[in-house]
Amino acid sequence: MLWTSGDDGVDYPILEESHTMTKWLGFALLACGAVSAAAALAPQNEGLVWFEDYQEALRQAKQSHKPLFVEFRCEP
Amino acid sequence: MAGRVFDAQVVLSPLDSPLGKLLSQYVCARITRMDKVDIGLFERDWNNTLYFFMLNEDEQIYMRYGGRDDASSDTYLNLESLRLALEQGLDLHRRYGQGQLPKVERPQPFSPRQIPLLVERTFARNACVECHLIGDFQNIQRERDGTLDRPKHLYRSPDIKTLGIELDVPRGLVVKTSGGAAKAAGVRAGDRIAALEGTPVWTFGDFQYRYDKVDRRAKEIRLALDRGEERIDVTVALPPRWWWTDLTFRQSTVEPRVYFSSRELSDEEKTRLGFPSDGFASEVVHVDEFARTVKSHELRAGDVVFGVDGVERDELANTAELFIKLRKKAGDSVMLDVLREGKRLRTPLRTYRMSFRK
Image (cartoon, rainbow over all chains, first blue to last red; front, top):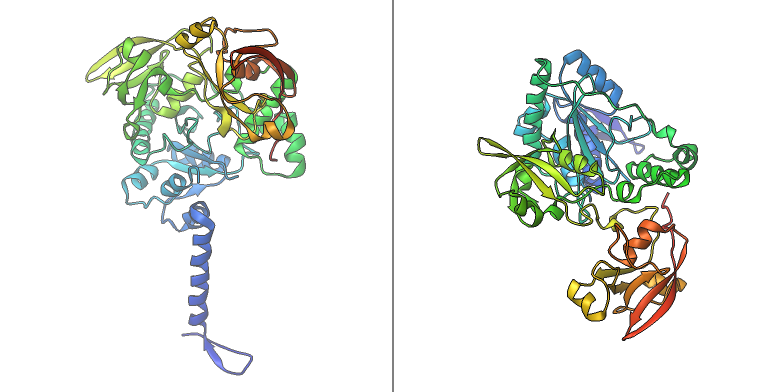
């Protein structure tokens, strides 16, 4: 476990901070709604990559000879 | 919430799920900014908040997925039908690779920056080029250029239900119930719509896109149906104003706002009141509060409107309300012929343009 020194001279475990951060991150994701969650979580969705740039996706399709599936999402 | 849940369900599909397994066979892209998109290639009704294309590296579009009705942008979004479409897309891709599909000419590239008003009002302000703004400014531009064809450009998502067809949405283009013009033409529950006017369609998005391309003055359309192992061709008589939809969901459109709504009188009601059956006679059913506030007209619920500036019938419009939307410009003033409590009178109405949010 990692420790950090507080201003009061007392050492605090960093793990506690991480838990707090995780809680805040979870809360933020919930608060932002499904779309924001989708955007934030997409990179963590193991293996399934969503390109944000069409030209980049097209280059990838030319390399892999896979078909393209392009979603247009209007986020007003 | 339009499309948000569906969007999340698609993007967050686990790789080992049926949908994830199919998606992993594609190169997936999720585009949320339209400023660099070739809107010539990815042309569609810009009031769909969520829309999908399946295509290949030569930019040959296999199919569209999405489409909507005026009640909701979600009506035809369904994970089961998307899965079917993805499977079909893979099959088409295999066939394309084997040279079994004809190559279609790629649409001319067209950039949002080629719409001057969009550049002036959106790009110049570094504002987000939202999908609907493309359609909105295209229409304003067309109106300025004198090329706006209102039935075609404003009423972009004709509803398959006007044909009498209710789809079994999870099964794509399989007919759930058939009535009206479709039933009269021989369309049956269980049939799968395979082509419209000779063009293959795989999804509701495909169907609606092709249906939208039908000339608004057309009297009939040809459908190919798969019924069991058989392919059947039918010709469906198009009902009057088959292209009409309620435009209310479109936040910004160029048609004049009249701030009342009406219903066409039945033939029997028209005859009883002495109006021709092909005339505008329609009963005011709702008067918007805005009309009272700005005194744009003095119509009351129950009034029967039967003329606009002396015109009482039109090739396309069946009511005075629709006639104004199709034939007048936002900001125009007109004189309405009205029957109120048995007395005929003329009363003015001023139209307005819906102000843009952006």
